[in-house]
Image (cartoon, rainbow, N blue to C red; front, side, top):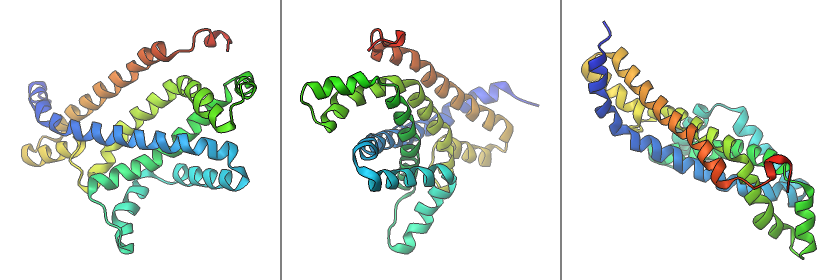
Length: 223
């Protein structure tokens, strides 16, 4: 029978993998955001060649499973003399994958910025890259906050894939406990509870971030 008290007792042990999960997810998210922020001006100002390269990157990483990308980096690259430890390989795979999705998020939010913002920058004598860096990107990020938070939640949940190559995050920690307690049902329920609580808290932060970074009057069609 399901033992609720046993599940509660398991949580402290499983939480030992929480910091690894958060570290993997947050660093990957930051890497993805930086790459996506670089991709945007490349798509807008880089001409047909750069735009095609970025689009191809996005299609490849969105069109193939994250697990395959992870296995390719961890098991495939060593044949070329490139080796990574499990954590580094996971961060690299997750970051490159997230960059593709965050690029589309930023592209969609950028389209919502009124053209008048571009024209205002030009009237001040700013270059195209200056307009993008100082005017467009900050506003696009504000608009994209809900979608970016959802992407972080997705990374937190998908971080469990890293357990396949030996990263001792939440899911891997649960596997260890199953091997010692032989109580798979209770262990994985405890793991699921922790994932749910973390993802719920991160999702709820969307409202706080929207209030903090909102553009006054923008929601009413201003700007």
